[in-house]
Image (cartoon, rainbow, N blue to C red):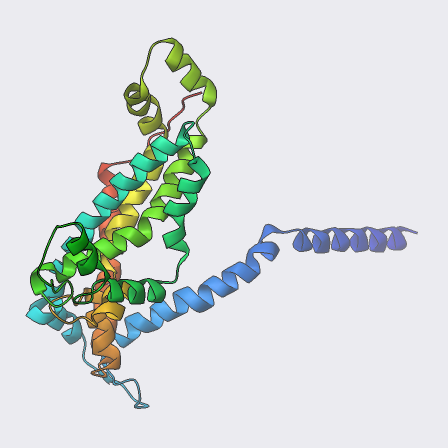
Amino acid sequence: MTGRTTAARSAIEAGRARRKILHSPWLYVAPALILLITFTYVPVGNMIWYSFHKWDGLDVTMDPVGLDNYVRVFTDEQYWRVFLISLYYFVASFAQIAIALYFAVVLSFNTRFRNLFKGILFFPYLLNGVAVGFVFLYLFQPDGTLDTLMRVLGLGEHTQLWLGDPDIANISLAGTSVWRFTGLNFVLFLGAIQSIPGEIYEAAEIDGANRWHQFRHIIAPGIRRIISLSFILAISGSLSVFEIPFIMTGGANGTRTFVVQAYQTAFQFRQIGLASAMAVVLLLIVLLITWLQRRFLPDDEVSLS
């Protein structure tokens, strides 16, 4: 009897162990982890490996070059100078955040046609980047839609090379990016504002607070984390702009961004190792800026209830 009892207990314990394994959280997250590792971390590891080699993407063998690709990225003017183009998009991203925050605050209160304006603001973000590029490409054509509209409004009589003049081409492209991505920031801000309890606004109105006071003392502190996230997205986005300049100008007329330069280096000039080094440098810069932002502007717990 003792032997049977021991065997039964062992079987029960084994069954419990199997049930624990089946109910383990790792079993549920395993598919997501497999996809993440396969399509994110493995490609990043390969990119880092390529960056230490000279390779055209076709040969079976790769020639090790050590840090030569990284030295070239930092010393060759044509590679690091394109970072200056990101300043146009960096400035535009702050305008984008300001516009999105303004409309999010206004539309968070009772406003006529509020839902209509929400849809209008968010709609550009739903469009494909290639489609947006072609639409604005026709808009900015000489004697195109924008020139015709300006003549009708009496704002200009001469044809303007919106994409052909290096002095204004990047401004035109940055403006296109503002039009497309304002909706994303708008939705983030609006969702954060609407999560603030309505009783706080009622109490503020009883105390005589106007809209500005409500924004300054209730809304701004309540959505601090979302504002911080928007700044991180603005910085990383301005450094990694690709679709708009690639579709509309192909990087011509001084509009080549760092990512467009890396793309052309890889697929036009067949320098996969050098392009990989550029991608690694961009990744490190984004991570460094994000770390600095989190280090000097930490997120504090905000409680308004």
